[in-house]
Length: 382
Image (tube, rainbow, N blue to C red; front, side, top):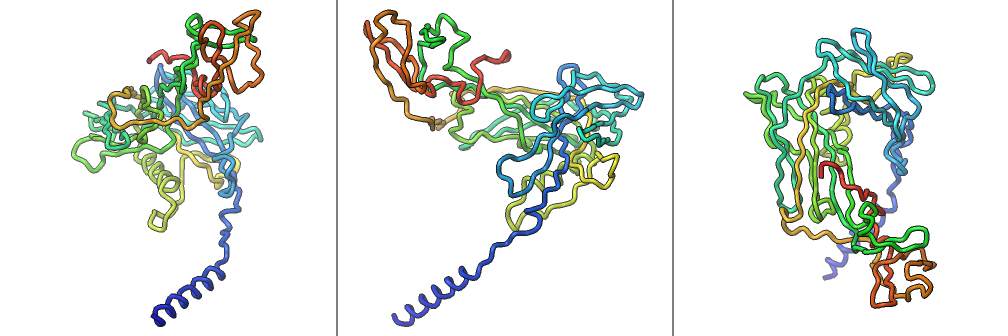
C-alpha cells in the first residue's frame, strides 16, 4: 500500500511539474495577415444559369469574427479569344453575377478582375468543357441522411467532375397563429395568405469542394459519389427538403488543383492529416506575377437535377425547437374596438381570440417563422 501511494504521489508530482512547465506556442503563421485574393466560381455555358464569382480576402488565423473579407468595388468580366467581353454586375457581399451566357465552344475564355486599387488579375485562357447529364441523385438514411450523385459520360470524354448544390427546406413556426398585427390593428391571417408566418422556406449553398474522377476506371462512370449530409433531427427535413445539384466538367489540372485545395482546407486538424501543399492556380496578378491568388478559373456547361425528401420518408426524425418557451398571456380585448392592439411588450403579439372578450398572446418568436432566417413566400418549384 505504501509503495502504491508512493507511485501515485510521484505521478502527481510529475504531472504538476509538466503542467507548470508548459509554454504557449504562437507560431509566426498565426499572426500573418497576407490578405490573399480568393476567387470562387465557374463560367457557365448555359442560357438558364447565370455565372457567379465570389471575391474575398483571406484573414488571419486568429480572427474569429468572420471567415473571409468580401472584395467589393471590383470590375469583373470574362473575355473571349475572339475579342468578345461579358461584364459581371456586383451584388452584395463580394458577389459578381452575369446574365446567362451562350459561349462559343470553339473559343477560349479568361477571367479579368480589376480591384478598387487599380491592380489587375487575369486568368489563363481556358476551353469550354461539356458536362454530361446527371443520371440520378439518391439518398440513404442510417441516422443522418447521406446524399449521392450518379453520372456517366457515354463518350468517355469527361473523366473529371465538379459539383455544387443549393439546399431548400420548408419549416414551420412552433405555433400557428390565426391573427396578425399591422399598424396597431389585428387582422385574420386567412384573409391575407401572403402574410402568413407559419410556413417558411430557407435556402443555403454548398460550401465544400466537391470533385470526382473516373480516371482509374474502365468506363467514365461516377457511382454514388457523396455530395452532402443532412444530420439526423435537423430542421431541414422537419417538413420537406430539396436539393438542386449542378454538375460541371473540369480538366485534369483543375481537378488536381481542387483536390489540393480540399486537402489544405478541409482535412487539416490532426497530426495524421495530410500536410498543406502549395497551391498553383491559373489566375495571376498582372503587376506582381509572384503574388499568391487562390482560385482556379474553369468554364463548362452545367447539368442539374433536383430531388425532394419529405418528412414521412425518413425515420426517427424528431426536430426539437431550441428557442424561447412559447408562453401564452391572456388579456381582455379592447372594449372600444376588439381589433385594436396596444399591448406594450414588443416580444408578444396576438395569437387567437377566445371566448367573447378574450385575446391570447404569445411570443413573436413562436409565431413568426421568418425570424429563423427564411422567407414566407413559397418557391415556384415547391
